[in-house]
Structures are given as C-alpha cells and as structure tokens.
Amino acid sequence: MSLKLALNATALLSPLTGIGQYVLNLAKELIKSGTIDLDFFYALYWQKTILDSPVAYSNQLRSSIRDYVPCSYELSRFLQKLRFTQHTKNNKFDLYHEPNYLLMPFDGPSVVTVHDLSWIHYPELHPVNRVRALNKYFEKSLENANYILTDSEYVRQEIIQLLSVKPDKVQAIHLGVDALFQPHTEEDVKAILQKYGLIYNRYLLAVGTLEPRKNLNFALQAYQQLPSDLRKIFPLIIIGMRGWKLSELDYSLQRSINREEIKLLGYIPRTDLAAITAGATTLIYPSIYEGFGLPPLEAMACGVPPIISAVSSLPEVVRDGGVTIAPTDQQALTNAINRLIDDPAYRKKLGRQALKLAQPMTWQFCAAQTYQAYQKTLSLY
Image (cartoon, rainbow, N blue to C red; front, side, top):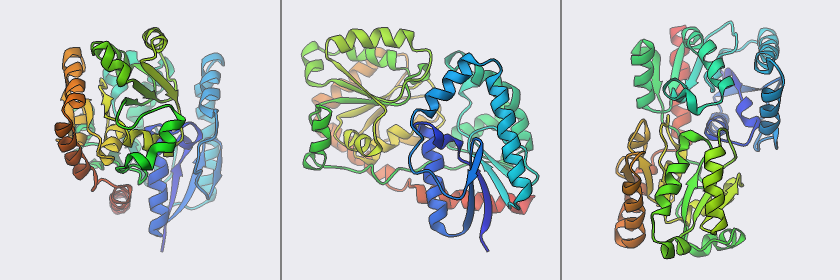
C-alpha cells in the first residue's frame, strides 16, 4: 500500500532557488518510486500533480505585497493554515512533509526540512520580515515535528548544539544533482553559449540569488585584482534572480558592467544554466554561510572545479573537488582564479576529482533516504 503524503510545494510558485529545486527533484523521484501517493499544497490550493516549471513572477508579486501591505505575512500565513488544515482534515494522510522550515498545523506525524540557520548567525543579511517570522515560529516548528531533516551534517550538528534538539531526532540527507549537469564538449553547448555571447572555457561563473550572504561584492573585488587583459578574456558571468539588500552590490556591478567585464544574465532556463556551467573555467562561490550549496555540486557534476569559502557546509559538500578560500581573503580568491586559468593540467585534474565525487550524489539516492526517514517517522509516532 502506498504511503499517503501531504507535501508543501509552495516553493515551486516562485523562480526555483535551492529550496524549490529540492522540492521539485525530491517529489519527482518519490513519484517515480511508486511507493508514495502525493498531494501537493501550493500556498492556497491543493492538487495531485507537480508543477514542472515555476509560476512566472509570483515571487516578485509576493515580495511587493509583503513590502507594502501591513501584516501581509501574518495574513498570508493565516490563510495558508486555513486551507491546509481544511484539506488535511477532510483527507486522511499518513504523513506531512514540510520542506521549508515552518510546519503547518497537522494532526498526525510530520517531518520538517531545515536547510540552514543563516538567519540566526547573520540576521542582518536577511529581509526583516523573514527573520521576524522565523524567530517567532521556528523553534515551535521543531518541537512539533516528529523528525527533522537537514541537507548537511554541518546543519544537523548546529541544530543539536544550538537548539538542544536530541541527536536521534535529526538526520542529514545530502541533496542531489539534476541529470542536466554533466560534462559537455564545446560542440555540445556551442549553440547555447553563442546565445549569451560566451566562449567555451573562457569565462568565470557565479550562480545564486543576488543577496548579501552570497558574498558577491567580495568576489567582484577579488576579480578586479586580476590583470585587466585577463579580465577581457575571462569575463565574470553572474546568473540568478535579484534578491534583497542590493544597493552596495548594484553600485559595484554597474561600474564593472560599464567596462564589459561582467555579464549579468538574471534567472535563466535550467538547460541553459547546465550548459553554461559545463563551459565555465570555474564557479566562484565564496558564500558567508551555506546549509548545502547546490551550484558548487552542479559544477562538480560537470567536471568544473568550484572555488568555495571554507565555512559552514561547503567543505563537506565539495571535499577535494574544488579550491577553498577564506570568505574575507580577497588575495586568496584572486590567486585561486589565476591558478585555475593559468594551469590547465591542475584544473583538469581537479575537475576529474570533482566529477568523481559528485557522481554518487543523485536525487534518486536523496529520495530513497528521505523515504526511509518517512518510514522511521511513522515507526516513532
């Protein structure tokens, strides 16, 4: 008999960031397994099918409402709780999985996924409304959950140590890599690269929502330390939707864009992102804090060695498949970029290591472990 699961899939209603990718790929693999009967909750409505592509502009619309409508978060949360509980009371579910921190009310066993604790360590890097909501509801959500999942052992240990949660209540399950991300020859990706004016293996890449935690200003400053002739040959390509607290970054970006050293592509289709990742010299990912970090793993799956900051979960994910630097050491980042450009043998060796390390990390394996966690939750309830 199939396990009947209620899954909050609201993260699919906006351009897919890391949490959206988690929900999408986990759900697809659970459906493929044939062991689970899924109902998806999309903010205010339910359906049996998964959204393969995000609803356009819904994130920007929700952000505008949050910014200009008084108490909009509380109102939205109230309405979501109402619609969620109406459906779960009228339909018998074996389990509820909340993949985005804050549980809805549910009369039955529940699992919650906690991706990171960045708002605790760096509240100044997040929107005020988000920090306020998480401070208000998060610890109660952990108390109410029967089982807690994290994307990394690093975050698991943080939850145990900082929030005094019992170790046997928390399990780390690494995320996977979309099959789109794999090594590609120049010929494979030529058409897509031409669309964006890019040359295979002749650009540096940064991927992620434009927000302070990604430390892009630091990356730009390190990039500017490269010789000007090298910057002309190796532009920095930035991919990701606009986030929050961007005034300082916008100023730095505008100066560089005017010199045609930076290309800001915004949010692009996943097929294009995979091709551009495979054609990059390196991925630059010097985040201040990450609960996992999908872009470095996706680069590794393409045989492209990432440069990461040696903090939080990133060394756990990348291991020996990339270069680590302190997220405050500009010279170290500049040197790392220089070496990957100047030493093709080193870059290829590191790329082979990266590919080997990334290959076992699949969404199928993530979903299988998550299903086992569901079974464990049911046995404990």
